[in-house]
Length: 485
Image 1 (cartoon, one colour):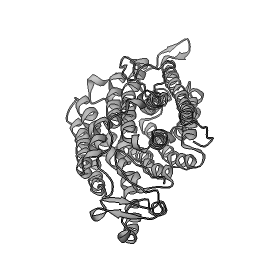
Image 2: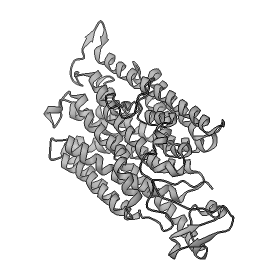
Image 3: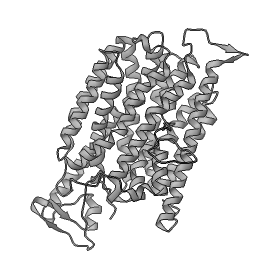
Image 4: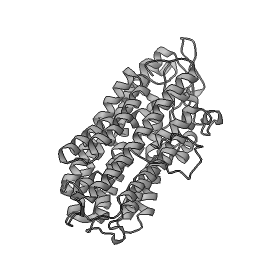
């Protein structure tokens, strides 16, 4: 049987082909493989027909709720580049942020990084607390408050970074943990549909946010965005619930035997997009965990406006195109992975995204940069959709909760430091409306962005090497090689 068990939730399945049930109300359930394949859930015999009808409806509702959750959580994370351009520009509402790319990008990467790193405390809550609705609703409120309070304060690290990031993590992980339980076959497709919301979110939020910032200014733009998130998130939170028949207490501590495996070390390494050739212990915090895949989206608008001389509205439109293509790619990558193997698809996705940075972003004029925006979205779209199912395949269902939480924690740490280091490479520079600095006929800002592209590309290609090692090491540990894996 091919159930996806997530975040410590447990399901017991018998070896025989007959279905039976035990306990009151189906609290302890064993089902046949054939029934599980048809419905994707476990229920007692005497209520199977009614639940099957309910399950199809609830599956659709969960997919819709998950779609809108990622629409806002990942969608808002992906458009921080618009705030990056505004906060660092001469028109900034926060004077201390003007021309400070490294410091401002840290606000965005703390927020998005905590979305993932928050798994270290949200996962145990999900595994042990029955009321997932309360966790999700708390996350929605905190995330919205982070955006709204940022409109009244210049302390963005406390509001748009810390408060927003903690809230987004509590909003994200409960629904991502409960939804896959209801799906058996075509898991890649199901997760691709849910995570497609992030691309659609970025596509819709980018031009909408730019319009709000232009017409009403940053304070009201943030308030409207926060209220919008709250209004959408409350109905989503009401959908989430534990199901009888699934244990609420799963393993959330890391098995140290797994930590010693090469697959674990390199899985954690490539998930954070930092892939050193000599990998030291994961607790070595002296090495920054770089988020190579975040850099292009964080600086997409800045490059469009400051180097290519596009307007801000056009820059936000290009960001929207990137998000829209990324959304379609997540679904396509999920379908491709179901047919050719999830690890195989992930390897190709990571390598090609890195190569596209070198081939298309480096020293890019307008036409080539638009090609980069589209192709990078295509290649990078499969990573998030495939990471959860890849972890399940490599480490087993019983270890999914602990490994997934730790891998996402490491990934979040990488996201926090990747873009600010790119900001250090950029340094301070003149913006739109200023005369560009030219040395020997070469735009100095173009050179700096080229260095950022090289930095991002190296991280992504090195991450691809780690993904390939995980593929080889997993086959070695299991004692067999499969072409489809």
